[in-house]
Image (tube, rainbow, N blue to C red; front, side, top):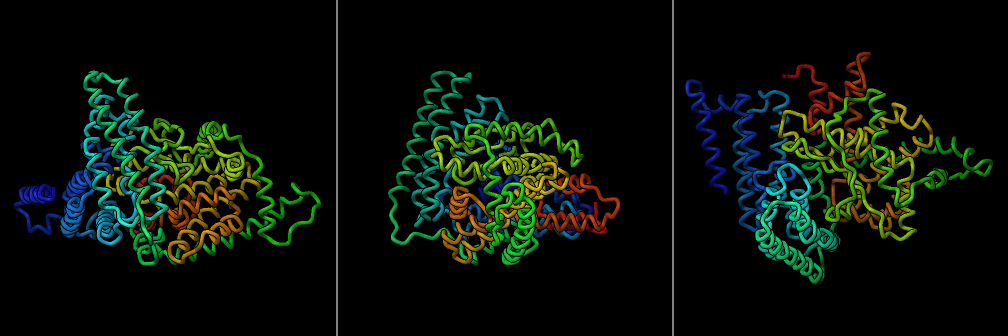
Length: 587
């Protein structure tokens, strides 16, 4: 594999020499914008060969039939790739590239550094069994209509060929796994088996593939199920007297924050800012709660403790919620309402041709978040965007009631703004329109989550919810969730915050229901850094918005800011800020 990559680089170099044989040396040639664009295309092609699963879910389908066995030799190929591509990148001077290409350069550079760090320092393949959950890619091939069904099924079949070898190797690689991640992996893999032993068979019945061939394909599907069950049995029976902690620790956390978030601040600075934001939100929530107290409690004595006062008002408002069976239908009804509001207030232009489908959260995704959006990749821009909604089926009544109080009639609307319109769904549609593949492929999670949080406040500022103090209070509570996500994540992974302390933070200071707090503890024990992306991105976008507003003066408009900001794709906010506030930006 690495020889192919080296050969591709040589071919590219020879091509550039041939095109510029009358010019100067190599350094001069590589300053050309077209040459750098050619390099970015080569980089992505080489990346997809090494990460075919990622390619598939990005919408690049040339390698759909490949499943690479996660061996030591495969990791060495990836390490060699990062070194070769880092050397290639040095041939280009970012200072003479256009602003857009300069961001692409920085994104590729960060990607290579993060890959090296993951491979040589973090080494999650040893302690995180969820590294080996491949079911999502198989489900993507089965469910997305990017190619004829028969072709997708044959790719699915070919890809399954390596599943037994894949999980046999995975058992060799896993050493002293984190118990919480082990449990999550077992649940997700068991929950996703239906992709192979039911969904695949159902799809085959709809295909034109000959019956004899279908039988062979089903045999391989059974072998795949057996291999996955074998891995979950291995994980279930694994013994460790001193298992690795799920906590990353200060050093690993800071590095992961730097690479994943690509922020303008350090992790410590963001934690400090979040702590101050929490104080501000408590003050504003206290004012609104005093205003609302007579409406809901009449002449009853008002609690002197501010947090108790806020908690009582929120608890009262939280009793207004849908029934468990109405949770997903209620979300489906909200989507057109949000679409119409954005249009009426002229907040930004929406693309009605891009479908948004609300669906029950697939089993292989369950256990981390209650709602999420899955969007098509930049190579598959016509694909569906899914609003994945967690199911409450089978929940104990008290657990369901706690969950629904958390997502009451106010916060259910905020949730839909965040996940769908004009949050994730809208932003990712814009992102897929950017001419830069690099920005779409190497998208920045903090920008994406930050936009979703920013869009909530923008909608309320535009009058969504009829300016009711109840809706604003509940949004403050929701915003407090983003803030406390950051405080929680940093405190747990860097400062050894206990579960008891975490639950107290979330229930007393963030006013969350017990079920939500328990779920968040589970999430922070199986993930790291991602929970900081909401507040970090939000803070950077609001800072940029305020600076841009000052720069534009009377010419400022919300719609112009929103569309200009989104036009840069899912790039880190600090890079977008340079372009939007720069005085002499190159085109």
